[in-house]
Image (cartoon, rainbow, N blue to C red):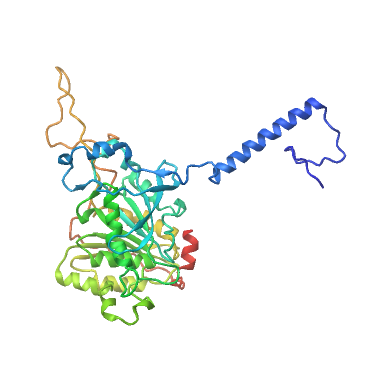
Length: 429
Protein backbone atom coordinates (compact mmCIF):
# COMPACT_ATOMS: atom_id res chain seq x y z
CA UNK A 1 0.00 0.00 0.00
CA UNK A 2 1.28 3.43 -0.86
CA UNK A 3 2.27 5.27 2.29
CA UNK A 4 1.81 8.97 2.87
CA UNK A 5 5.13 10.82 2.31
CA UNK A 6 4.11 13.85 4.34
CA UNK A 7 5.22 12.48 7.67
CA UNK A 8 2.16 10.96 9.35
CA UNK A 9 2.83 7.44 8.09
CA UNK A 10 -0.80 6.70 7.33
CA UNK A 11 -2.31 5.31 4.13
CA UNK A 12 -3.73 7.69 1.58
CA UNK A 13 -6.43 5.40 0.20
CA UNK A 14 -9.94 5.98 1.54
CA UNK A 15 -9.06 9.07 3.56
CA UNK A 16 -10.77 12.45 3.32
CA UNK A 17 -8.64 15.03 1.57
CA UNK A 18 -7.81 18.14 3.60
CA UNK A 19 -8.64 21.54 2.14
CA UNK A 20 -5.92 23.53 0.31
CA UNK A 21 -4.90 25.58 3.37
CA UNK A 22 -4.48 22.52 5.54
CA UNK A 23 -2.66 20.80 2.69
CA UNK A 24 -0.11 23.64 2.50
CA UNK A 25 0.43 23.46 6.27
CA UNK A 26 0.96 19.72 6.11
CA UNK A 27 3.37 19.99 3.19
CA UNK A 28 5.37 22.74 4.87
CA UNK A 29 5.53 20.85 8.14
CA UNK A 30 6.56 17.63 6.45
CA UNK A 31 9.26 19.37 4.46
CA UNK A 32 10.62 21.01 7.60
CA UNK A 33 10.65 17.70 9.46
CA UNK A 34 12.41 16.01 6.54
CA UNK A 35 15.09 18.69 6.42
CA UNK A 36 15.56 18.54 10.19
CA UNK A 37 15.89 14.77 10.34
CA UNK A 38 17.92 14.59 7.14
CA UNK A 39 20.23 17.36 8.27
CA UNK A 40 20.86 15.66 11.60
CA UNK A 41 21.65 12.40 9.80
CA UNK A 42 23.96 14.23 7.40
CA UNK A 43 25.94 15.71 10.27
CA UNK A 44 25.98 12.37 12.04
CA UNK A 45 27.50 10.68 9.02
CA UNK A 46 29.93 13.50 8.27
CA UNK A 47 28.33 14.90 5.12
CA UNK A 48 28.58 18.46 6.46
CA UNK A 49 31.48 17.93 8.85
CA UNK A 50 35.00 19.28 8.77
CA UNK A 51 36.54 15.82 8.37
CA UNK A 52 39.28 16.02 5.76
CA UNK A 53 40.04 19.67 6.48
CA UNK A 54 43.65 20.77 7.09
CA UNK A 55 44.83 20.72 10.70
CA UNK A 56 47.64 22.70 12.33
CA UNK A 57 48.41 21.64 15.88
CA UNK A 58 49.54 24.32 18.30
CA UNK A 59 49.22 27.06 15.68
CA UNK A 60 47.95 29.58 18.25
CA UNK A 61 51.31 29.49 20.02
CA UNK A 62 53.65 28.88 17.08
CA UNK A 63 54.94 32.45 17.02
CA UNK A 64 55.49 32.61 20.76
CA UNK A 65 57.26 29.27 20.71
CA UNK A 66 59.77 30.16 18.02
CA UNK A 67 60.53 33.84 18.56
CA UNK A 68 63.54 33.40 20.83
CA UNK A 69 65.40 30.12 20.94
CA UNK A 70 67.33 31.38 23.95
CA UNK A 71 64.11 31.26 25.98
CA UNK A 72 63.45 27.57 25.32
CA UNK A 73 63.34 25.67 28.58
CA UNK A 74 66.05 23.11 29.33
CA UNK A 75 65.01 19.65 28.21
CA UNK A 76 62.38 20.98 25.78
CA UNK A 77 62.63 20.49 22.02
CA UNK A 78 60.51 22.91 20.03
CA UNK A 79 59.25 21.73 16.60
CA UNK A 80 62.18 21.63 14.21
CA UNK A 81 60.27 21.21 10.94
CA UNK A 82 59.64 20.49 8.20
CA UNK A 83 55.97 20.82 9.03
CA UNK A 84 53.75 17.92 7.94
CA UNK A 85 50.45 18.37 6.15
CA UNK A 86 47.72 16.99 8.42
CA UNK A 87 44.05 16.38 7.61
CA UNK A 88 41.39 15.88 10.25
CA UNK A 89 39.95 12.37 10.53
CA UNK A 90 37.78 12.69 13.66
CA UNK A 91 36.97 14.77 16.70
CA UNK A 92 36.42 13.95 20.36
CA UNK A 93 33.68 15.51 22.49
CA UNK A 94 36.21 17.80 24.18
CA UNK A 95 37.15 19.34 20.82
CA UNK A 96 40.47 17.54 20.44
CA UNK A 97 41.08 15.96 17.08
CA UNK A 98 42.80 13.06 15.38
CA UNK A 99 44.64 13.92 12.18
CA UNK A 100 46.49 11.93 9.56
CA UNK A 101 49.46 12.56 7.31
CA UNK A 102 51.65 10.54 4.97
CA UNK A 103 55.30 10.19 5.95
CA UNK A 104 58.23 9.11 3.83
CA UNK A 105 60.96 8.08 6.24
CA UNK A 106 64.35 9.59 5.48
CA UNK A 107 66.19 6.70 7.11
CA UNK A 108 63.98 3.75 6.19
CA UNK A 109 62.80 4.96 2.79
CA UNK A 110 59.36 3.57 3.63
CA UNK A 111 56.20 5.60 2.97
CA UNK A 112 53.15 5.10 5.16
CA UNK A 113 50.44 6.92 7.04
CA UNK A 114 50.69 8.27 10.57
CA UNK A 115 47.83 9.46 12.79
CA UNK A 116 48.31 11.92 15.66
CA UNK A 117 46.17 13.07 18.59
CA UNK A 118 47.21 15.78 21.04
CA UNK A 119 45.48 16.44 24.39
CA UNK A 120 43.69 19.72 25.02
CA UNK A 121 46.51 20.82 27.34
CA UNK A 122 48.80 21.04 24.31
CA UNK A 123 46.91 24.11 23.05
CA UNK A 124 46.55 25.68 26.50
CA UNK A 125 48.56 28.95 26.47
CA UNK A 126 49.95 28.03 29.90
CA UNK A 127 51.80 25.11 28.26
CA UNK A 128 52.99 26.94 25.14
CA UNK A 129 56.64 26.50 26.14
CA UNK A 130 56.31 23.04 27.67
CA UNK A 131 57.24 19.68 26.19
CA UNK A 132 54.76 16.81 26.22
CA UNK A 133 55.42 13.08 26.63
CA UNK A 134 54.90 10.91 23.54
CA UNK A 135 53.23 7.50 23.48
CA UNK A 136 53.87 5.80 20.12
CA UNK A 137 50.85 3.50 19.74
CA UNK A 138 51.16 0.37 17.61
CA UNK A 139 48.25 -1.81 16.40
CA UNK A 140 48.01 -5.55 16.08
CA UNK A 141 46.64 -7.45 13.14
CA UNK A 142 47.56 -6.20 9.70
CA UNK A 143 48.74 -2.80 10.87
CA UNK A 144 48.53 -1.61 7.25
CA UNK A 145 47.29 0.50 5.51
CA UNK A 146 45.70 1.80 8.71
CA UNK A 147 46.48 1.93 12.42
CA UNK A 148 43.22 1.14 14.22
CA UNK A 149 44.22 3.27 17.23
CA UNK A 150 44.17 6.30 14.94
CA UNK A 151 41.33 5.71 12.51
CA UNK A 152 38.79 6.89 15.08
CA UNK A 153 38.07 7.29 18.78
CA UNK A 154 35.85 4.20 18.91
CA UNK A 155 38.33 2.05 20.84
CA UNK A 156 38.57 4.76 23.49
CA UNK A 157 42.35 5.23 23.67
CA UNK A 158 42.25 9.00 23.28
CA UNK A 159 39.35 9.32 25.70
CA UNK A 160 41.18 7.17 28.26
CA UNK A 161 44.19 9.51 28.17
CA UNK A 162 41.94 12.57 28.31
CA UNK A 163 39.92 11.23 31.24
CA UNK A 164 43.08 10.15 33.05
CA UNK A 165 44.66 13.58 32.64
CA UNK A 166 41.52 15.22 34.00
CA UNK A 167 41.43 12.84 36.97
CA UNK A 168 45.16 13.17 37.65
CA UNK A 169 45.87 9.48 36.96
CA UNK A 170 47.55 9.91 33.57
CA UNK A 171 49.85 12.34 31.88
CA UNK A 172 48.40 14.11 28.84
CA UNK A 173 50.34 12.11 26.26
CA UNK A 174 50.69 12.97 22.60
CA UNK A 175 49.57 9.81 20.77
CA UNK A 176 51.48 9.02 17.56
CA UNK A 177 49.99 6.11 15.64
CA UNK A 178 51.92 4.83 12.59
CA UNK A 179 51.30 1.81 10.39
CA UNK A 180 53.59 -1.06 11.38
CA UNK A 181 53.72 -3.29 8.30
CA UNK A 182 54.64 -2.60 4.69
CA UNK A 183 51.69 -4.45 3.16
CA UNK A 184 48.74 -6.69 4.03
CA UNK A 185 50.51 -9.93 3.13
CA UNK A 186 53.27 -10.21 5.74
CA UNK A 187 54.23 -9.37 9.28
CA UNK A 188 57.62 -7.67 9.47
CA UNK A 189 58.07 -8.03 13.27
CA UNK A 190 58.65 -4.28 13.55
CA UNK A 191 62.17 -5.01 12.37
CA UNK A 192 64.69 -4.48 9.60
CA UNK A 193 64.49 -7.95 8.10
CA UNK A 194 67.35 -8.32 5.60
CA UNK A 195 66.12 -7.66 2.08
CA UNK A 196 62.75 -6.29 3.24
CA UNK A 197 61.33 -2.81 3.98
CA UNK A 198 63.00 -1.37 7.06
CA UNK A 199 60.02 -1.30 9.40
CA UNK A 200 62.24 -1.25 12.49
CA UNK A 201 63.98 1.92 11.32
CA UNK A 202 60.57 3.38 10.36
CA UNK A 203 59.22 2.98 13.92
CA UNK A 204 62.37 3.62 15.95
CA UNK A 205 63.87 6.48 13.90
CA UNK A 206 61.56 8.01 11.30
CA UNK A 207 58.40 8.21 13.42
CA UNK A 208 60.18 9.86 16.39
CA UNK A 209 62.00 12.26 14.02
CA UNK A 210 58.66 13.19 12.45
CA UNK A 211 57.22 13.79 15.92
CA UNK A 212 60.10 16.07 16.91
CA UNK A 213 59.68 17.99 13.67
CA UNK A 214 56.03 18.79 14.41
CA UNK A 215 55.54 18.87 18.18
CA UNK A 216 57.00 20.13 21.45
CA UNK A 217 58.75 17.09 22.90
CA UNK A 218 61.27 16.19 25.59
CA UNK A 219 64.91 15.90 24.63
CA UNK A 220 65.47 12.95 26.98
CA UNK A 221 64.09 9.42 26.86
CA UNK A 222 61.95 10.28 29.90
CA UNK A 223 59.42 11.72 27.48
CA UNK A 224 59.26 8.78 25.06
CA UNK A 225 57.33 5.50 25.40
CA UNK A 226 55.50 2.87 23.35
CA UNK A 227 52.25 0.99 23.68
CA UNK A 228 50.95 -1.75 21.43
CA UNK A 229 48.76 -4.81 21.18
CA UNK A 230 49.50 -8.29 19.81
CA UNK A 231 52.19 -7.87 17.12
CA UNK A 232 52.22 -4.17 18.03
CA UNK A 233 52.88 -5.22 21.62
CA UNK A 234 55.92 -7.12 20.39
CA UNK A 235 57.12 -3.98 18.61
CA UNK A 236 56.57 -1.83 21.71
CA UNK A 237 58.45 -4.29 23.93
CA UNK A 238 61.29 -4.81 21.48
CA UNK A 239 61.95 -1.15 20.72
CA UNK A 240 62.26 -0.15 24.38
CA UNK A 241 64.66 -3.03 25.09
CA UNK A 242 66.69 -2.43 21.93
CA UNK A 243 66.94 1.34 22.34
CA UNK A 244 66.81 2.03 26.09
CA UNK A 245 68.77 5.23 25.54
CA UNK A 246 65.84 6.61 23.48
CA UNK A 247 62.72 5.10 25.05
CA UNK A 248 61.95 4.53 28.69
CA UNK A 249 58.75 2.50 28.99
CA UNK A 250 56.19 0.34 27.19
CA UNK A 251 52.70 -1.05 27.64
CA UNK A 252 52.67 -4.38 25.79
CA UNK A 253 49.22 -6.00 25.51
CA UNK A 254 48.68 -9.58 24.40
CA UNK A 255 52.22 -9.40 23.08
CA UNK A 256 54.35 -11.85 21.17
CA UNK A 257 57.76 -12.54 22.72
CA UNK A 258 59.87 -13.84 19.82
CA UNK A 259 60.33 -12.72 16.22
CA UNK A 260 58.53 -15.27 14.06
CA UNK A 261 57.95 -13.76 10.62
CA UNK A 262 58.64 -16.26 7.83
CA UNK A 263 60.51 -13.47 6.07
CA UNK A 264 63.52 -14.04 8.35
CA UNK A 265 64.29 -17.21 6.36
CA UNK A 266 66.21 -18.72 9.25
CA UNK A 267 68.56 -15.75 9.71
CA UNK A 268 69.10 -16.38 13.42
CA UNK A 269 71.70 -13.64 13.86
CA UNK A 270 69.31 -10.96 12.60
CA UNK A 271 66.46 -12.46 14.64
CA UNK A 272 68.54 -12.37 17.81
CA UNK A 273 69.04 -8.63 17.31
CA UNK A 274 65.27 -8.27 17.58
CA UNK A 275 64.48 -10.87 20.25
CA UNK A 276 63.09 -9.25 23.44
CA UNK A 277 64.54 -11.94 25.70
CA UNK A 278 68.05 -11.62 24.32
CA UNK A 279 67.80 -7.83 24.36
CA UNK A 280 66.68 -7.89 28.01
CA UNK A 281 69.56 -10.18 28.95
CA UNK A 282 71.98 -7.80 27.26
CA UNK A 283 70.50 -4.82 29.12
CA UNK A 284 70.75 -6.63 32.45
CA UNK A 285 74.39 -7.49 31.76
CA UNK A 286 75.09 -3.85 30.93
CA UNK A 287 73.35 -2.79 34.16
CA UNK A 288 71.10 -0.28 32.53
CA UNK A 289 69.66 2.10 31.75
CA UNK A 290 66.41 1.29 33.58
CA UNK A 291 63.33 0.47 31.50
CA UNK A 292 59.73 -0.05 32.62
CA UNK A 293 57.47 -2.67 31.03
CA UNK A 294 53.78 -3.16 31.75
CA UNK A 295 52.29 -6.33 30.29
CA UNK A 296 48.53 -6.58 29.81
CA UNK A 297 46.61 -9.82 29.36
CA UNK A 298 42.90 -10.65 29.42
CA UNK A 299 41.50 -13.62 31.29
CA UNK A 300 39.71 -14.74 28.11
CA UNK A 301 42.89 -15.04 26.05
CA UNK A 302 45.99 -17.18 26.27
CA UNK A 303 49.49 -15.86 26.76
CA UNK A 304 49.61 -15.08 30.47
CA UNK A 305 52.07 -17.87 31.14
CA UNK A 306 54.47 -16.44 28.53
CA UNK A 307 54.30 -12.98 30.08
CA UNK A 308 54.91 -14.36 33.57
CA UNK A 309 57.81 -16.50 32.33
CA UNK A 310 59.41 -13.43 30.75
CA UNK A 311 58.95 -11.48 33.97
CA UNK A 312 60.49 -14.23 36.10
CA UNK A 313 63.55 -14.54 33.88
CA UNK A 314 64.19 -10.92 32.92
CA UNK A 315 62.30 -8.78 35.42
CA UNK A 316 65.34 -7.82 37.44
CA UNK A 317 68.11 -5.26 37.62
CA UNK A 318 67.30 -2.43 35.21
CA UNK A 319 64.29 -4.26 33.71
CA UNK A 320 61.20 -3.37 35.77
CA UNK A 321 58.05 -5.33 34.94
CA UNK A 322 54.43 -5.60 36.02
CA UNK A 323 51.33 -7.46 34.84
CA UNK A 324 47.88 -5.93 34.39
CA UNK A 325 45.31 -8.73 34.32
CA UNK A 326 42.06 -7.65 32.64
CA UNK A 327 39.08 -9.57 34.01
CA UNK A 328 36.96 -10.95 31.16
CA UNK A 329 39.38 -9.25 28.78
CA UNK A 330 39.80 -10.59 25.27
CA UNK A 331 42.46 -10.26 22.59
CA UNK A 332 41.25 -6.90 21.27
CA UNK A 333 41.80 -3.16 21.56
CA UNK A 334 38.79 -2.37 23.73
CA UNK A 335 39.90 -4.81 26.41
CA UNK A 336 43.41 -3.38 26.38
CA UNK A 337 42.17 0.19 26.73
CA UNK A 338 40.16 -0.94 29.74
CA UNK A 339 43.36 -2.35 31.24
CA UNK A 340 45.08 0.96 30.62
CA UNK A 341 42.27 2.74 32.47
CA UNK A 342 42.48 0.26 35.32
CA UNK A 343 46.16 0.76 36.01
CA UNK A 344 48.66 0.75 33.16
CA UNK A 345 48.26 4.41 32.21
CA UNK A 346 48.78 5.50 35.79
CA UNK A 347 51.78 3.20 36.16
CA UNK A 348 53.56 4.42 33.03
CA UNK A 349 52.74 8.05 33.87
CA UNK A 350 54.67 7.76 37.12
CA UNK A 351 57.95 7.05 35.33
CA UNK A 352 57.61 9.59 32.51
CA UNK A 353 58.27 13.34 32.40
CA UNK A 354 55.27 15.60 32.78
CA UNK A 355 54.47 18.86 30.97
CA UNK A 356 54.64 21.92 33.19
CA UNK A 357 52.80 25.23 32.78
CA UNK A 358 54.51 28.58 32.85
CA UNK A 359 54.66 30.15 36.33
CA UNK A 360 52.08 32.81 36.98
CA UNK A 361 53.52 36.29 37.23
CA UNK A 362 53.81 37.59 40.79
CA UNK A 363 51.40 40.50 41.31
CA UNK A 364 52.96 43.75 42.53
CA UNK A 365 52.86 44.25 46.27
CA UNK A 366 50.63 47.00 47.63
CA UNK A 367 50.21 48.23 51.22
CA UNK A 368 47.99 45.88 53.13
CA UNK A 369 47.99 43.23 50.42
CA UNK A 370 48.89 39.60 50.99
CA UNK A 371 52.64 39.11 50.55
CA UNK A 372 53.61 37.31 47.34
CA UNK A 373 54.91 33.78 47.50
CA UNK A 374 58.58 33.39 48.18
CA UNK A 375 60.98 32.49 45.36
CA UNK A 376 61.06 28.75 44.78
CA UNK A 377 57.54 28.11 45.96
CA UNK A 378 55.41 25.96 43.65
CA UNK A 379 53.33 27.92 41.14
CA UNK A 380 49.79 26.76 40.54
CA UNK A 381 48.43 25.38 37.31
CA UNK A 382 46.05 27.07 34.91
CA UNK A 383 43.16 25.58 36.87
CA UNK A 384 44.60 26.84 40.15
CA UNK A 385 44.16 23.51 41.87
CA UNK A 386 47.46 21.67 41.47
CA UNK A 387 51.19 22.39 41.69
CA UNK A 388 53.05 23.38 38.57
CA UNK A 389 52.53 20.30 36.48
CA UNK A 390 50.06 18.86 34.05
CA UNK A 391 47.37 16.57 35.46
CA UNK A 392 49.28 13.56 36.70
CA UNK A 393 49.52 11.01 39.49
CA UNK A 394 50.23 12.38 42.94
CA UNK A 395 53.40 10.36 43.31
CA UNK A 396 55.96 8.75 41.04
CA UNK A 397 58.17 5.74 41.68
CA UNK A 398 61.83 6.48 42.12
CA UNK A 399 64.22 4.92 39.60
CA UNK A 400 64.87 1.34 40.53
CA UNK A 401 61.65 0.94 42.50
CA UNK A 402 60.46 -2.61 43.00
CA UNK A 403 58.22 -4.03 40.30
CA UNK A 404 54.52 -4.45 41.03
CA UNK A 405 53.75 -8.12 41.75
CA UNK A 406 51.32 -9.88 39.38
CA UNK A 407 47.67 -10.26 40.48
CA UNK A 408 46.00 -13.49 41.59
CA UNK A 409 45.72 -16.22 38.95
CA UNK A 410 42.98 -15.73 36.38
CA UNK A 411 40.40 -18.29 35.22
CA UNK A 412 41.41 -20.73 32.48
CA UNK A 413 41.94 -18.61 29.34
CA UNK A 414 40.53 -19.44 25.93
CA UNK A 415 42.64 -19.81 22.82
CA UNK A 416 44.42 -16.64 21.69
CA UNK A 417 43.47 -15.01 18.40
CA UNK A 418 45.54 -15.94 15.37
CA UNK A 419 48.71 -13.91 14.69
CA UNK A 420 47.17 -12.59 11.47
CA UNK A 421 45.02 -10.41 13.69
CA UNK A 422 41.70 -10.81 11.85
CA UNK A 423 39.63 -10.70 15.03
CA UNK A 424 41.57 -7.77 16.43
CA UNK A 425 41.43 -5.85 13.15
CA UNK A 426 37.67 -6.21 13.16
CA UNK A 427 37.50 -4.87 16.71
CA UNK A 428 39.88 -2.06 15.85
CA UNK A 429 37.97 -0.91 12.81
